[in-house]
Image 1: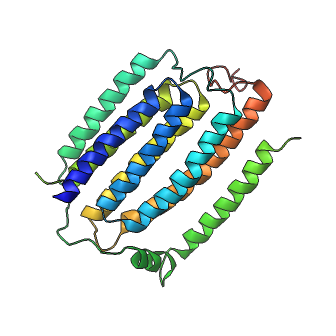
Image 2: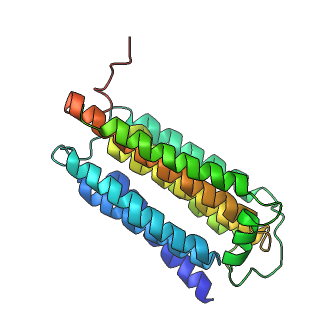
Length: 162
Length: 103
């Protein structure tokens, strides 16, 4: 019962924050609404009993990505112009509503193979076994590390003053 | 009615549609990146929901979600670097005015 209340509250806050990202006239405020949206996604992960992912979400999205976005808003002079839309707003709106209706229709008419098993209490050790254990995905972890290194070098190279 | 898999999937579809609307209809490149982050978060929600309700012990969806977060972090870093480089050259990040690749 508590999980239901938490889900509905988080869902309402998340939808409102996502709408605020798109609709608010000030870009800086919509970036702050994006932070709220990231935090509610972490709360949704907690209701799905994914504790490790909730911590990762707060660390990476709220701690790193949101700060990057706010910094780049400050470095460019976009705040003065406001959150402008292009002239395709109405067709895009119609396409998105159609997409939403089709997706919800497809989701409600599919019989998902829902399992009745209880979820794990703590997910961290199981995730560590999958990622680092025998027959695990350790190669993917290494590729991810290389991807992050390439990202750092690439970002520095792109923004460096000549 | 208790909250099930469909509720989480519909929530993720709503967030994805809002992100799609924003990324297709905004002029500022930073706002477009923010909306792409919204769409990636919606995908993460549905992955974790599948992991909770379909494979609650194997946690397959959560592993997918970890790699999706990793790729999202590197994507937004390079994207913002490109935006700042464009801003230095053109004094604007309005994507309807950045058309030097158009012929």
